[in-house]
Image (cartoon, rainbow, N blue to C red; front, side, top):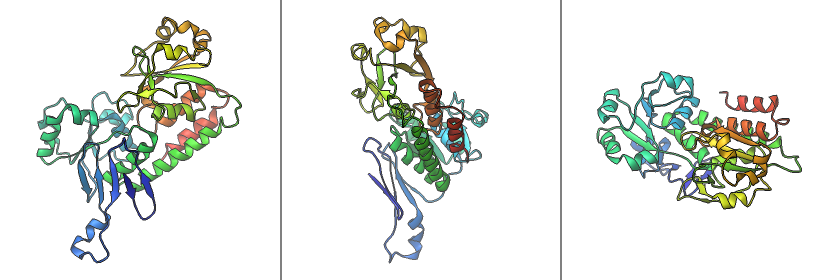
Length: 331
């Protein structure tokens, strides 16, 4: 699917159902319909088609990534509710909490004009979503899975909220920062090989096109599990202990995300039967990293690149790298 404007064509990957395009009327259209010339039309991941005639101004966000990105777009006042367990940014902690487990009447009483969800909520709680829509509340379901989709996602949030220019700036500054961070390791003759754990108990890693692997490679790491096949349409991939151990002599660093999906400890990884053969385990090169800076589609992916870079190449990721990240997140 394609997002077209007079300046660019943005191709969206097939896995990301959300498509964005500008609707333009023919040159001879009636004046009464001229407002549609600047209206954005969005089809979300639930298949809803929405024409954005004016920005939404009372927003409830039911996904932490939406919340972070809305704050990055400068929408503090427009956010009237967030999901439980928010931890970032600090301003989100001051907002009323809403959940898809709540009675829909709680939402109706707050009078939102937009509720942002993700596909998991759409699939798991259809009656809740239908009740909101029946009451006239616009619901939009979004969750990018790859970095290319992330850029489209930021643009979509900008269209929904009238923040197109800040959204484009976020994309541009993120891309420029990634280029500069990648340049820090470009001259290395040998880059460190990494196994990046997604879920320890099931011996799963990340698919090659996932954000986590993008972050790893932007930091100069080499993914030893490039052949991992994704589980259904997720960014998680089966790998298994046997395949991990087939790379035992090559793995310089064992990296594991830690968070809701995976809660390992360094001792758990070190003591996993058979893992004593892995070079990284022998050398105590085992590290845990917050899943929110490697898997969540926000500007904090830059923090993930910085943190992994410090693990892999501490001499290269010093003050200059920190400055790159901080400048890219400043608007």
